[in-house]
Amino acid sequence: MEPTWQAAQARHKFSDLVDAAVDGEPQFIRRRDGREVVLVSREYYERTKPNLKGYLLNAGYAKEDAFDTAMRDIRSGPPLFSPRDATAEASRD
Image 1 (tube, rainbow, N blue to C red):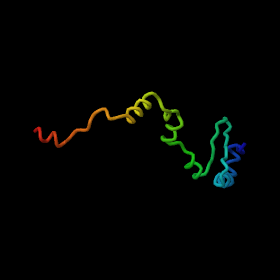
Image 2: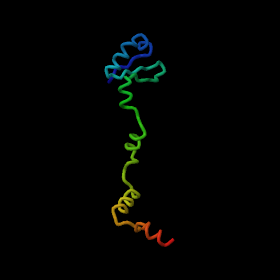
Image 3: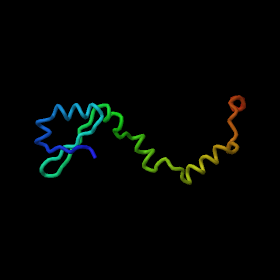
Image 4: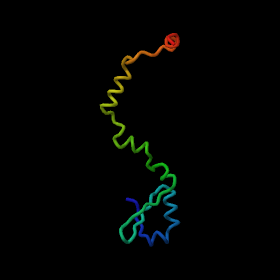
């Protein structure tokens, strides 16, 4: 487990905490009321921050359902309608 600092200790050793975070070691800081924060480097934050694409892919929305199956079957089969012939329509007018 990573080291947990009390808030008062963290204030006095802030530069050490920042150095450790920059070196890739997240630093946990706990207040007297039990609430905690984590100090990490910007590189780590940018690499691990959540984004919409990641959320949707990992939240179960990317699984194939009945609609996806039906659409795949329709797209893989013959066309439902024949393409319009623009020259034939022009000669009718």
